[in-house]
View (cartoon, rainbow, N blue to C red):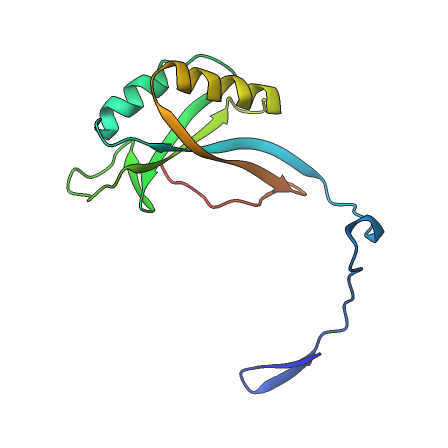
Length: 136
């Protein structure tokens, strides 16, 4: 395949097997946390955070975003928010995350009266985050 970047032509000579099982992978994939998306239209971000901070377990609330804007901690009061919240949970430094700890977290969120609608696990690949940064 030949493609142009600016005034230079480049040729892509890399090949990848079409079937996943035919690809040898030496990439280290590590589960590092999870983003839990909530539907909530009757509580403020501070009320949501207060509930989530009280959940004990391996994963801790790190940041909450709404429409891509950080709203907790240190969110601006004038940010227009919707009923769809992304809540990032990460472990303490150098701790591992398991699928069981994420399942436990989801159960606690439900028990606390919040509705989770989507989960996206956060992985690193060869030590590099494969997920977007959520600044605090």
